[in-house]
Image (tube, rainbow, N blue to C red; front, side):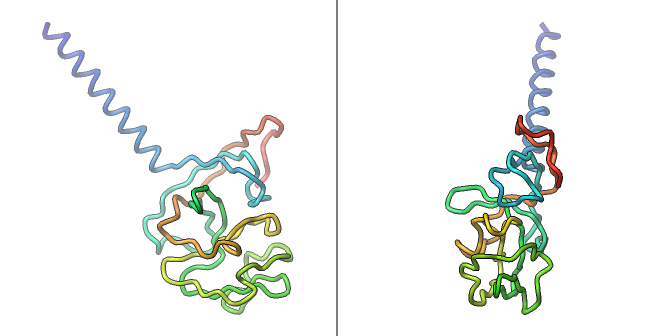
Length: 169
């Protein structure tokens, strides 16, 4: 009787520990599957990536690729401007604080709201897809707040598309 009770307690303990590990992994390493080509060539459609929750708004900076919620949809974009920055797209070029951005990849056809200077307030980030001319991003819906951000993408693991052998990033 005693060994049966001990086995049940041991099984429950193992179950609780395993569940704790799974929950910790899920929240420490958010799995992300890229949908669409707005981040091409950095990330491709069906890339499986991992991300981590930023410790604070101060942990985010221009260049970080983040996943956030916008109108109920998950988006993956690059932060091109952080709090205190001014963003302007002029003649197809992205300027941050009146300097050509390090994240200017191609001539931008549609400046959206950044056709005029957009000041990024505290707790806001201007996010754009790397494939600028196919991306639905902050040019359309405005800056993203820290509370919308789910994770910073850290790694690309594999492309899940059966038609690809893996994508170059």
